Length: 319
Image (cartoon, rainbow, N blue to C red; front, side, top):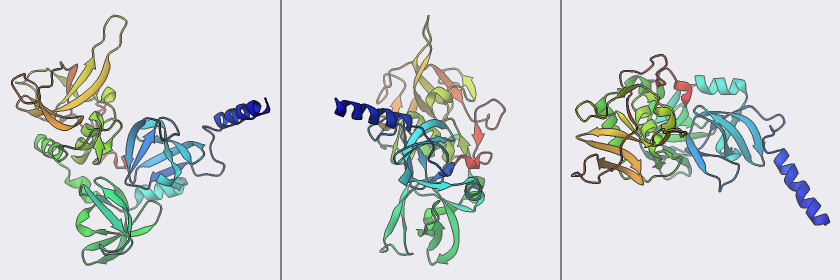
């Protein structure tokens, strides 16, 4: 009986502190690893809702053991582990946002303790990750700092000045398709939003962001962005987004379950089991035999009031 009371007390205690703020812990954090999984609950077996790349600013509002409950720029009330984060107060967060940065401009590489490929690795470093710029340079290398302040080195051709990167973005239909094609064969993972693995909306969001446009995270949000266009091969353009799911009916709300990008030539490119190109007609290869709920056009509506679409230049803090 005493054992039962002890177990019950322990469960109640753990439930009571599940969302408690750690005393004197800063309210802000920045992702300090190449990509951080954000889970529904503070448990490794819990579903992964999304990922945030290195350099993303998070707000902390709860804790349980080594887990922290955070709000991301496009996701609320999710959990990641303390070791993935660099904790910061308000001043530290503002200093991070204002600091000159490099963005990783190759798909996959590493940071090192010294400017040498034979030096000890600090961490992996993937497309879209952000680090603070250092002042020291060596032949073929630049000094960088993780959000935690740890000094390390990146190969100079693996990074681009972040401000220059923003200015160089060109959101054209050709750029969208070329970017999407780079990830063909990447495996699907629920909640995936990095070059290592994508879910459907993580893929479309990542492709658009690489071209300088910030979309909402999930398909159920992306379907309300931009302009609706007909599902008509003569009117759709490459880069348009096609949404799939269950239409609304009597007593039933619409459910958006999948998003794909129109590739042109009656095809889509999407993350379904892996990034692949599928035909929208039965005579084509890998026929995707589903009727879309809607088609939305993003290009031409960036930074329009109410469009739900922002340019990276208007939202650089997104990272």
